Length: 295
Image (cartoon, rainbow, N blue to C red; front, side, top):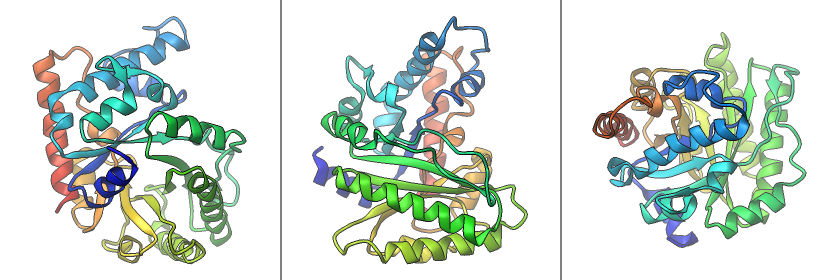
Protein backbone atom coordinates (compact mmCIF):
# COMPACT_ATOMS: atom_id res chain seq x y z
CA UNK A 1 0.00 0.00 0.00
CA UNK A 2 1.20 3.50 -0.81
CA UNK A 3 0.31 6.56 1.29
CA UNK A 4 -2.90 7.30 -0.63
CA UNK A 5 -4.04 3.69 -0.31
CA UNK A 6 -3.27 3.75 3.42
CA UNK A 7 -5.28 6.96 3.76
CA UNK A 8 -8.28 5.33 2.09
CA UNK A 9 -7.88 2.14 4.14
CA UNK A 10 -7.76 4.12 7.38
CA UNK A 11 -10.68 6.37 6.43
CA UNK A 12 -13.00 3.76 4.93
CA UNK A 13 -11.89 0.43 6.41
CA UNK A 14 -14.56 -1.57 8.20
CA UNK A 15 -12.51 -2.67 11.16
CA UNK A 16 -10.29 -1.44 13.98
CA UNK A 17 -6.72 -0.47 14.85
CA UNK A 18 -4.70 -2.80 17.08
CA UNK A 19 -2.53 -1.12 19.72
CA UNK A 20 0.75 -3.07 19.91
CA UNK A 21 2.79 -0.19 21.32
CA UNK A 22 3.58 -1.13 24.93
CA UNK A 23 6.90 0.57 25.73
CA UNK A 24 9.51 0.35 28.48
CA UNK A 25 7.30 1.12 31.45
CA UNK A 26 4.33 -0.98 30.36
CA UNK A 27 6.18 -3.96 28.86
CA UNK A 28 6.62 -5.96 32.12
CA UNK A 29 2.88 -5.65 32.82
CA UNK A 30 2.07 -6.73 29.26
CA UNK A 31 4.42 -9.72 29.54
CA UNK A 32 2.90 -10.73 32.88
CA UNK A 33 -0.55 -10.67 31.30
CA UNK A 34 0.87 -12.87 28.55
CA UNK A 35 2.05 -15.39 31.14
CA UNK A 36 5.72 -14.40 31.38
CA UNK A 37 6.61 -13.40 34.95
CA UNK A 38 9.11 -10.77 36.09
CA UNK A 39 12.60 -12.24 36.29
CA UNK A 40 12.21 -14.27 33.11
CA UNK A 41 14.63 -11.90 31.36
CA UNK A 42 18.16 -10.85 32.28
CA UNK A 43 18.11 -7.33 30.86
CA UNK A 44 16.06 -4.85 28.86
CA UNK A 45 17.12 -6.35 25.53
CA UNK A 46 15.79 -9.76 26.54
CA UNK A 47 12.59 -8.18 27.82
CA UNK A 48 11.96 -6.42 24.52
CA UNK A 49 12.89 -9.61 22.70
CA UNK A 50 10.11 -11.45 24.53
CA UNK A 51 7.51 -8.79 23.79
CA UNK A 52 8.57 -8.75 20.15
CA UNK A 53 8.03 -12.51 19.95
CA UNK A 54 4.48 -11.94 21.22
CA UNK A 55 3.86 -9.19 18.68
CA UNK A 56 5.25 -11.26 15.82
CA UNK A 57 3.03 -14.16 16.85
CA UNK A 58 0.03 -11.80 16.65
CA UNK A 59 1.02 -10.26 13.32
CA UNK A 60 1.62 -13.65 11.72
CA UNK A 61 -1.59 -15.19 13.02
CA UNK A 62 -3.95 -15.98 10.11
CA UNK A 63 -6.79 -13.97 11.66
CA UNK A 64 -4.70 -10.78 11.90
CA UNK A 65 -4.70 -10.48 8.13
CA UNK A 66 -8.37 -11.31 7.54
CA UNK A 67 -9.33 -7.68 6.85
CA UNK A 68 -10.87 -6.88 10.24
CA UNK A 69 -7.69 -5.22 11.54
CA UNK A 70 -7.13 -2.11 9.43
CA UNK A 71 -4.17 -0.66 11.33
CA UNK A 72 -1.61 -1.35 14.05
CA UNK A 73 0.25 1.03 16.36
CA UNK A 74 3.86 0.02 16.96
CA UNK A 75 6.54 0.74 19.53
CA UNK A 76 9.78 2.07 18.00
CA UNK A 77 11.68 -1.18 18.62
CA UNK A 78 8.87 -3.11 16.93
CA UNK A 79 9.05 -0.82 13.90
CA UNK A 80 12.76 -1.58 13.68
CA UNK A 81 12.23 -5.34 13.98
CA UNK A 82 11.07 -8.00 11.55
CA UNK A 83 8.05 -10.27 11.24
CA UNK A 84 7.83 -13.14 8.83
CA UNK A 85 11.38 -12.35 7.78
CA UNK A 86 10.70 -8.79 6.58
CA UNK A 87 10.56 -5.38 8.31
CA UNK A 88 7.43 -5.07 10.46
CA UNK A 89 5.88 -2.06 8.63
CA UNK A 90 6.33 -3.84 5.30
CA UNK A 91 4.83 -7.05 6.68
CA UNK A 92 1.82 -5.21 8.06
CA UNK A 93 1.20 -3.51 4.71
CA UNK A 94 1.43 -6.89 2.98
CA UNK A 95 -1.34 -8.09 5.28
CA UNK A 96 -3.54 -5.06 4.59
CA UNK A 97 -2.76 -3.44 7.95
CA UNK A 98 -1.74 0.24 8.05
CA UNK A 99 1.32 0.84 10.29
CA UNK A 100 1.43 3.63 12.88
CA UNK A 101 4.22 4.51 15.33
CA UNK A 102 4.01 5.60 18.97
CA UNK A 103 6.22 8.72 19.14
CA UNK A 104 5.69 10.25 22.59
CA UNK A 105 8.38 9.96 25.25
CA UNK A 106 6.06 9.51 28.20
CA UNK A 107 4.23 11.87 30.52
CA UNK A 108 5.15 14.79 32.72
CA UNK A 109 4.06 14.82 36.37
CA UNK A 110 0.44 15.79 36.94
CA UNK A 111 -0.28 19.53 37.05
CA UNK A 112 -3.65 21.29 36.90
CA UNK A 113 -5.41 17.96 36.62
CA UNK A 114 -3.54 16.70 33.55
CA UNK A 115 -0.32 15.07 32.45
CA UNK A 116 1.27 16.69 29.42
CA UNK A 117 3.70 14.88 27.15
CA UNK A 118 7.41 15.15 27.76
CA UNK A 119 9.38 17.15 25.16
CA UNK A 120 10.12 15.42 21.84
CA UNK A 121 13.19 17.21 20.46
CA UNK A 122 13.95 14.43 17.96
CA UNK A 123 10.41 14.11 16.62
CA UNK A 124 11.19 15.19 13.05
CA UNK A 125 14.10 12.76 12.78
CA UNK A 126 11.99 9.90 14.12
CA UNK A 127 9.17 10.74 11.71
CA UNK A 128 11.60 10.81 8.78
CA UNK A 129 12.94 7.38 9.75
CA UNK A 130 9.43 5.99 10.17
CA UNK A 131 8.27 7.35 6.82
CA UNK A 132 11.27 5.76 5.11
CA UNK A 133 10.20 2.41 6.58
CA UNK A 134 6.67 2.75 5.20
CA UNK A 135 4.89 3.96 8.34
CA UNK A 136 1.70 5.93 7.65
CA UNK A 137 1.08 7.78 10.89
CA UNK A 138 1.95 8.35 14.53
CA UNK A 139 0.31 8.27 17.94
CA UNK A 140 1.05 10.31 21.07
CA UNK A 141 -0.71 10.24 24.43
CA UNK A 142 -1.56 12.76 27.14
CA UNK A 143 -3.80 12.09 30.16
CA UNK A 144 -6.62 14.13 31.69
CA UNK A 145 -7.40 13.33 35.34
CA UNK A 146 -10.15 15.85 36.12
CA UNK A 147 -12.38 18.51 34.60
CA UNK A 148 -9.89 21.39 34.61
CA UNK A 149 -10.58 23.91 31.82
CA UNK A 150 -7.02 25.21 31.86
CA UNK A 151 -5.47 21.77 32.01
CA UNK A 152 -7.65 20.38 29.24
CA UNK A 153 -6.85 23.36 27.01
CA UNK A 154 -3.12 22.84 27.67
CA UNK A 155 -3.36 19.16 26.70
CA UNK A 156 -5.26 19.86 23.49
CA UNK A 157 -3.00 22.77 22.52
CA UNK A 158 0.11 20.59 22.98
CA UNK A 159 -1.40 17.73 21.00
CA UNK A 160 -2.17 20.01 18.06
CA UNK A 161 1.22 21.74 18.27
CA UNK A 162 3.04 18.42 18.02
CA UNK A 163 0.52 17.22 15.44
CA UNK A 164 1.53 20.06 13.16
CA UNK A 165 5.16 18.93 13.39
CA UNK A 166 4.08 15.43 12.36
CA UNK A 167 1.98 16.73 9.47
CA UNK A 168 5.01 18.74 8.37
CA UNK A 169 7.00 15.50 8.28
CA UNK A 170 4.44 13.94 5.93
CA UNK A 171 2.77 11.57 8.39
CA UNK A 172 -0.77 11.31 9.80
CA UNK A 173 -0.92 12.14 13.54
CA UNK A 174 -3.23 10.35 15.96
CA UNK A 175 -3.82 12.81 18.80
CA UNK A 176 -4.61 10.97 22.05
CA UNK A 177 -5.81 13.14 24.95
CA UNK A 178 -6.96 10.24 27.11
CA UNK A 179 -9.60 11.00 29.75
CA UNK A 180 -9.18 8.85 32.87
CA UNK A 181 -12.31 6.68 32.95
CA UNK A 182 -12.22 6.59 36.78
CA UNK A 183 -12.61 10.39 37.10
CA UNK A 184 -15.79 11.40 38.92
CA UNK A 185 -16.28 14.46 36.70
CA UNK A 186 -15.70 12.69 33.41
CA UNK A 187 -19.00 13.72 31.78
CA UNK A 188 -18.33 17.41 32.37
CA UNK A 189 -14.67 17.16 31.41
CA UNK A 190 -15.34 15.24 28.20
CA UNK A 191 -17.61 18.03 27.01
CA UNK A 192 -14.81 20.53 27.67
CA UNK A 193 -12.41 18.23 25.81
CA UNK A 194 -14.70 17.90 22.79
CA UNK A 195 -15.20 21.64 22.55
CA UNK A 196 -11.46 22.35 22.89
CA UNK A 197 -10.70 19.87 20.10
CA UNK A 198 -13.32 21.49 17.87
CA UNK A 199 -11.74 24.91 18.39
CA UNK A 200 -8.29 23.63 17.51
CA UNK A 201 -9.53 21.70 14.49
CA UNK A 202 -10.71 25.00 13.05
CA UNK A 203 -7.11 26.27 13.16
CA UNK A 204 -5.93 23.60 10.71
CA UNK A 205 -5.62 24.34 7.01
CA UNK A 206 -8.45 23.08 4.80
CA UNK A 207 -6.21 20.37 3.33
CA UNK A 208 -4.97 19.10 6.71
CA UNK A 209 -6.46 16.23 8.68
CA UNK A 210 -5.66 14.51 11.95
CA UNK A 211 -6.95 11.43 13.72
CA UNK A 212 -8.21 11.32 17.30
CA UNK A 213 -7.88 8.55 19.89
CA UNK A 214 -10.25 9.15 22.79
CA UNK A 215 -11.66 7.34 25.79
CA UNK A 216 -15.12 5.95 25.08
CA UNK A 217 -17.33 8.81 26.29
CA UNK A 218 -19.63 8.49 29.29
CA UNK A 219 -22.39 10.06 27.16
CA UNK A 220 -23.00 8.00 24.03
CA UNK A 221 -22.64 10.03 20.85
CA UNK A 222 -20.80 12.91 22.53
CA UNK A 223 -18.04 12.87 19.91
CA UNK A 224 -20.33 12.80 16.86
CA UNK A 225 -19.24 16.37 15.86
CA UNK A 226 -15.62 15.18 15.83
CA UNK A 227 -16.41 12.05 13.83
CA UNK A 228 -18.11 14.12 11.11
CA UNK A 229 -15.58 16.97 11.08
CA UNK A 230 -13.89 17.42 7.66
CA UNK A 231 -10.46 17.80 9.28
CA UNK A 232 -10.71 14.47 11.11
CA UNK A 233 -9.75 11.35 9.16
CA UNK A 234 -11.00 8.91 11.82
CA UNK A 235 -11.89 8.80 15.51
CA UNK A 236 -10.72 5.72 17.38
CA UNK A 237 -11.34 4.59 20.94
CA UNK A 238 -8.99 3.29 23.60
CA UNK A 239 -10.24 0.63 26.00
CA UNK A 240 -8.92 2.66 28.93
CA UNK A 241 -9.01 -0.15 31.49
CA UNK A 242 -12.40 -1.57 30.55
CA UNK A 243 -12.59 -5.30 29.95
CA UNK A 244 -13.08 -6.41 26.37
CA UNK A 245 -16.80 -7.02 26.98
CA UNK A 246 -17.32 -3.62 28.64
CA UNK A 247 -15.31 -1.72 26.05
CA UNK A 248 -17.11 -3.37 23.13
CA UNK A 249 -20.53 -2.80 24.67
CA UNK A 250 -19.82 0.91 25.21
CA UNK A 251 -18.12 1.36 21.83
CA UNK A 252 -21.10 -0.08 19.97
CA UNK A 253 -23.18 2.80 21.37
CA UNK A 254 -20.98 5.33 19.52
CA UNK A 255 -21.49 4.90 15.76
CA UNK A 256 -18.56 6.04 13.65
CA UNK A 257 -16.02 5.49 16.42
CA UNK A 258 -13.80 2.42 15.96
CA UNK A 259 -11.61 0.56 18.42
CA UNK A 260 -7.92 0.96 19.02
CA UNK A 261 -7.58 -1.50 21.86
CA UNK A 262 -4.53 -2.97 23.56
CA UNK A 263 -5.71 -4.68 26.74
CA UNK A 264 -9.06 -5.43 25.13
CA UNK A 265 -7.31 -7.27 22.30
CA UNK A 266 -4.57 -9.07 24.22
CA UNK A 267 -6.05 -9.93 27.60
CA UNK A 268 -6.77 -13.61 26.93
CA UNK A 269 -3.55 -14.41 25.01
CA UNK A 270 -0.95 -16.55 26.80
CA UNK A 271 2.63 -17.53 26.00
CA UNK A 272 1.85 -21.13 26.92
CA UNK A 273 -0.99 -21.56 24.42
CA UNK A 274 -0.52 -23.83 21.43
CA UNK A 275 -0.58 -22.09 18.08
CA UNK A 276 -4.12 -23.27 17.42
CA UNK A 277 -5.35 -22.11 20.85
CA UNK A 278 -3.54 -18.79 20.46
CA UNK A 279 -5.00 -18.19 17.01
CA UNK A 280 -8.47 -19.17 18.17
CA UNK A 281 -8.33 -16.85 21.16
CA UNK A 282 -7.02 -13.96 19.07
CA UNK A 283 -9.61 -14.60 16.36
CA UNK A 284 -12.43 -14.46 18.93
CA UNK A 285 -11.17 -11.11 20.27
CA UNK A 286 -10.75 -9.69 16.76
CA UNK A 287 -14.29 -10.74 15.81
CA UNK A 288 -15.75 -9.18 18.95
CA UNK A 289 -13.87 -5.89 18.61
CA UNK A 290 -14.62 -5.72 14.88
CA UNK A 291 -18.33 -6.20 15.51
CA UNK A 292 -18.37 -3.35 18.03
CA UNK A 293 -16.42 -1.10 15.65
CA UNK A 294 -18.81 -1.56 12.73
CA UNK A 295 -22.03 -1.60 14.79
